[in-house]
Amino acid sequence: MTKITRNTMGKLRMTRSSDRAVGLFLSLSVSFVSSRAVERRLLSVGESSLRVGSLPKSNNGEGTFTRQQQQQQTKQIKNSVMCRLALIGLALACALVAAFAAAQDGGVWKVKFDVQYLDGKEGEDGNGSFVMEVHDAWAPLGAARWKEMVQSPTFFKDIRFFRAVRGFVLQAGIAADPQEAAQWRSKVLTDDPVVHSNKRGTVTFATSGANSRTTQFFINLADRNTFLDGMGFSPFGVIDAENMKVVDRFYFGFAEKPNQGLIQSQGAAYLGREFPQLTRIVNAQIIE
Image (cartoon, rainbow, N blue to C red; front, side, top):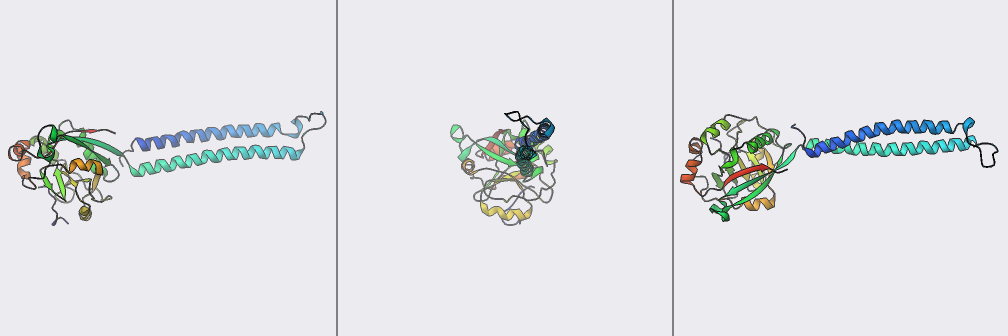
């Protein structure tokens, strides 16, 4: 049975931002190579035009530019070329740094959830929505599983928060249909290293031990949940303060009464019959 307790339980692909940075880097690289070829040609032409034997005559037609004048003008052309190449090189360096930073951050994307029974109320008064931000780099395997769940046509159609402990967690993640729940339950994930702390608003997969994550997840309701960091719970997303105002309206009246075994075997039918006021997700979609 997948459950966490307060006391006893102790590179994916880059997203649009990194793609844009890499694209800029490659574009500037081509510009740099092209510019160097052009500048070399210009420099060559400039130098050849300043050779003593082919220098233009002065206004009075007497004599030509002196070698000192030739060298000075050549130096000016070279300085202009080097200045331009330095600016292009600086732009390349900036683009490379941006691309590297984007790759390190990984993908960041958002999911919007539509919910019902806020405050345990049925109808319009109980409807609402919230947005969470997923960070691939925090927990790559967990983030990939979350995307798989969101892109499923049925999983988030009736996901009920069967465990609601004020000041601790809100837990959900068992599919409404027992057959679908059984299929997901067999898709076990290897653990991700914990790189982000379990503070208020973070979203984390629940476990029943090492390498046992499936689809059950919880929303941390307090900063003091950082004690979960040392137990292998790796957050993969976060809900900001504004959206947590909606989460704080989830129904807490049943606390930990629902039986997870019966939820697995009977699904939403059991929860609807015994705990009808539970807040539930009825739709999920990636918005950016």
